[in-house]
Image (tube, rainbow, N blue to C red; front, side, top):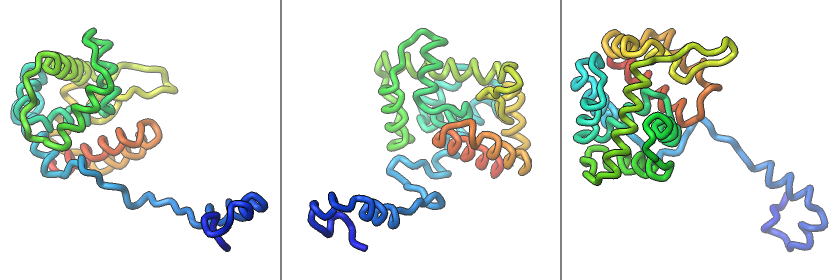
Length: 216
């Protein structure tokens, strides 16, 4: 069976179904091996940000905007750690922060910030006034969400913060940070959120749970 690029265009026009079948016959789906781009965060890098947050907050007993912003300024990768704990994509975090603080945070800004940190995870953030206000708004929103935990929703719904590490607020995070994650809980969370979160968010959440489990 020949492919469309191997024959004259007139032959393809005369029998398109044959060549469509030829194309589809060679298509394969690969889900066990994923692309690893330049912005991929290796475990030791992520762990550095996590440990910086854990130390500064005394194992997450003091989750305040000032403390988190201080860590973020010195160790920018901690911003991605915070977002991972929330379980948000960059645009989702920006949207919620804009709603809660009134400070406009565009998707372009937050995507650029995320990418910049991934490429240079330990390079201190600039002191541009607009950038600083936006990052402070993101962190302030994160502190509110992590402190409040997951609110009650209808039985046929599930809140994004209704997960082992954020459901009950700071107590849940402290428990995960100090005692670790039981393997059954890890598996349950990965299974339960598989259909509820976007692929990127689910991957981030799985990564954080795996790290929490390894640090038990």
